[in-house]
Image (tube, rainbow, N blue to C red; front, side):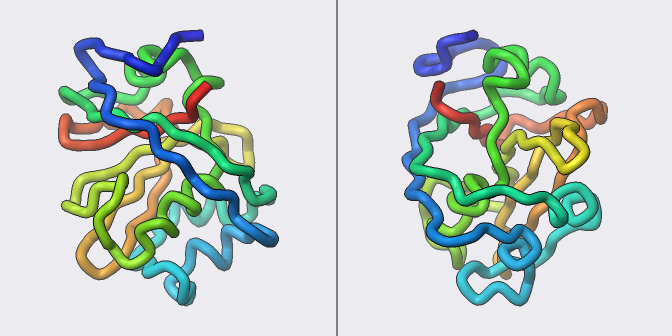
Length: 166
């Protein structure tokens, strides 16, 4: 496994480590990732995320730490995942992604970008496929989407990447 504590390469720049507090109670993605959620302002949940994650069952995460990286240049998911140590090293659960969003529930400053650029996490959908989960703030609320990592989409150099601290 790659030591990502001070990772520096031509793709990623290490930014910080973010500590997440545990979520208390049951985690229900269908309730949490909804525009009806009053704890977090959700603007849009795209169909691909709904299809892949809203039926998924997860328990709330314990306290978790995530590395935050800045993407230095345009790159598809494959080289990013490889630089971070492979699929098992980048995988975050969606409850942790929600916990991160909840820290900036209404778009206030914090570890997540709120400037229109994406915050990228990697999580397995209910079919077991690794997906890039894109979280962004559009001025009105959080936008959530999911794209399978096998998709050739390339992320631009303004995005941030989050993965668990090993």
